Amino acid sequence: MQNGKRTKSVSYAKYGYLFSIPFILIFAFFSLYPTVFTAVIGFTDFKGVTATTFNFLEAPFDNFVRVINNGTFQKSLINTVVIWVLNFIPQIGLALLLTAWFSNRSRKIRGQGAFKVLFYMPNIITAATVAILFAAIFGYPVGPVNSILSTLGLSSQAFDFTTDPWAAKLVVAFIQFWMWYGYTTIILISGVLGINPELFESAELDGATPRQMFFRITLPCLRTILVFTLITSLIGGLNMFDIPKLYIWNGGPANETMTASVFIYAQAFSGSYLYNRAAAASMIMFVIIAILAMVVFYLMRDKYESRLNKQIRAAKRAQRKAMRRNA
Amino acid sequence: MNMRPTLQNRKQRNGIIYAVSIILGILSILPFWIMIVNATRSTYQIQQQAISLIPSEFIANNFAVLTGKIFNPYTGFFNSFIISTGATICAVYFSTLTAYALVAYNWKLRQPFFTLILAVMMIPTQVISIGFYQFMYRIGLTNNHLALILPAIASPMTVFFMRQYMLPSLNLDIVASARIDGAGEFRTFNSIVLPIMKPAMATQAIFTYVNSWNSLFLPMILLTRKEYYTMPIMVSLLKGDIYKTEYGAVYLALALSVLPLLVVYFVLSKYIIAGVALGSVKE
Figure (cartoon, rainbow over the protein chains, first blue to last red):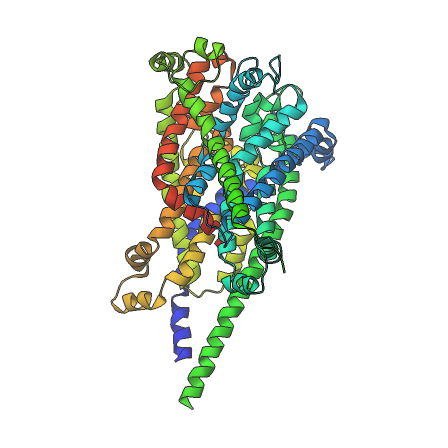
């Protein structure tokens, strides 16, 4: 019987290939080829808005060396990481606090659904809109924040939130935080719901306090999800573009909010259209992101494999049971 | 033995939790409230007092100022609508089809193909934008909606999600009995598998639509002609010198770009929050 099933499924195997063709074709055409093309451009003299031809450089890694030694690129990388850290630490902290509060078994917080809807709301709004809205809210010399500050008597003069390098970064980090903490909170809470409730029940019977249960059970069980959140947030952070680009146009005159993506955009699509330098910078980012993506890949694969193993074991057990019954 | 918190303690703690949650909720709403109110106020009023909770009556005036210049909300909506709708249909339909190939059939390269999808899932298109732009330029797909719609056919994230959903919910016996009834494989997919996948497809449709609607980087480099601008590109124009002192018009433009999203969000919020939560289950 089993053998019969297998030969039957083999005869349908061609449909597996057939139904994957659209994906594979489009992927090769719109993702794979552009990736290779970007890498190739990184080794050429390709620049200028009207240029269509290019030659390979005599020193193949010239663009990469120049980009790495470019002060603006270095600054953009540092800015990217600084803004990401400034947004991620409070984001994960607040998300964990809200998770502890909302998933506490001994107290019922009412209106959780409504709170989640509100916390997540900024995430679905167009980032371009959010950037310009916050630029207006933190406007100088007139803007809502400055008017609140002067009403409260905290500052006698209007404060410019774009020219001060730390204020500019903090505002961008705050916007990112504000857009993403709701998402992280929902992910963590649903992670807690996936933890075996018996763990909490037996801990409760043993007299554990909610605090102990959070630190000894919830946090360790959320470890994979926390790593996943960290890395996906880092990958997203390394690509940060809309907010830093639009909060201050192109990262500002002193590059206060110039991030790696804004740098790449500015290199390739303004000034002297240095496609080759932008491509080299892109490939550097590509390698960093690919390494991070690999970590996510292994996390998921392990989970996938352990689930697969579980299924195989369950199938074997069922088989054994069936055989015993037959015997 | 640890001291259990007294009832009064607990009440106080609950009070703190509600207070923090309400403050965060207000923080989510306040910027949009300021935006909507200021969209109805004149630039002069905003300059006099940047923050007000009471709407004024200059919305028509602001609209005239806004549309008298480069910002065209109709063009923006139209282009965003075409691209997002096209991309969503492509992503959802073809991802389900690809997932079906991964789940229902036993083929030699199935596992390597799935590994490939996992491997490229996290790579953002932004880092290959230079090659993408140059390639599209060469084949004449810049200033063309298709360059932003067709790539959605290969959405590794969506395929992954669909596969995870399909594994437990699709009973292959149904497929087998459809075969016995003489239905072709493609027809079986369209008439039997698609209806089963409806909930997952709805979830993915919402997120693909919102992501496509909101995206700025690729549209900005590919669509350089005014008549192709999407809503986010229109919004980015507000940053230029053209609208520098037109505060009322800028707020109105922002409100116009946000309102449809807010309406959709509050109508579908239940599904959206559930969809986000699923995102953690999927890994």
